[in-house]
Amino acid sequence: MEQFDQSLETFMNNVGWLAPFLFILLHLLRPLLFIPVIAVCIAGGYLFGFFEGALLSFIGLTLMSWISYVLVNKFPKFREKMSRLKDKIFPNRTLSVAQVMILRIMPFVHFHLLSLYLMEITKSLKEYMAISALGLIAPAILYTAFGQSISEFPWYVTASMFILLAAMFSFIERWQNSRTESD
Image 1 (cartoon, rainbow, N blue to C red):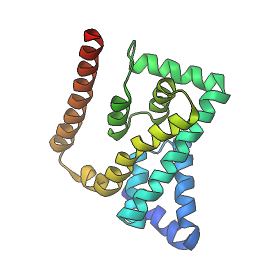
Image 2 (cartoon, helix red, strand yellow):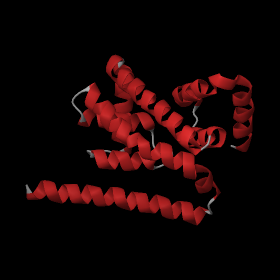
Image 3 (cartoon, rainbow, N blue to C red):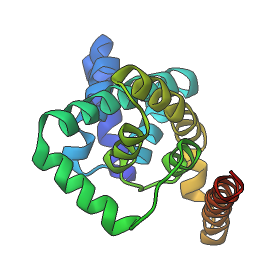
Image 4 (cartoon, rainbow, N blue to C red):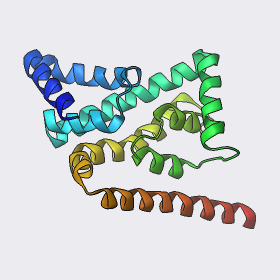
C-alpha cells in the first residue's frame, strides 16, 4: 500500500494540472485493477488534501455509479453476474436505502453489488443517481479523512468499528421488519 501511494504521488506530481482528471479516471479504472475504493480515497487525501481529495473521490465514485447503471442496463450478462453475487452474499434479502448507505461505508463491500440494490429500489436513472450520490458522500469523506488513520489503528479498533457498522445495519433491518409487520 505504501509503495502504491509513493508511485501514485510521483506520477501525479509529474502530470501537473491533469492530476485531478487522472485521479477521477483512476476511480473509474479501479474495478478493473482490483483496487479497493478505500485505497484510492486514501491516496486522494494524501495527494490532494482533505477537501479536494474528498471532492475528487466523490466525483469519481458518482461517475462509477452512473457506469454501474449503464453496465447493468445495457449488458444482461453483467446484470446476471451481479444478481448471482447478490444471491450468494445476501440470499433472500431485500436491503433498504439506509442499509445500502451503511454498507457503502464498510470497506471492501462490492461497489457494483450495492449499486444493483439501489437500482432495484429506485424507479429511474435520476432517482438512482440522486440516492447513489447521497450515499457516496460519507465514504468519500470518511475514507479520505480517516482512511489513513483507520489503516493504522490496531486490529481491535478496526474490528470494533466494523462491529458497530454491522450492528447499525442489523438494527435498521429489524426496525424495518417490525414496521412492515405492524402495517
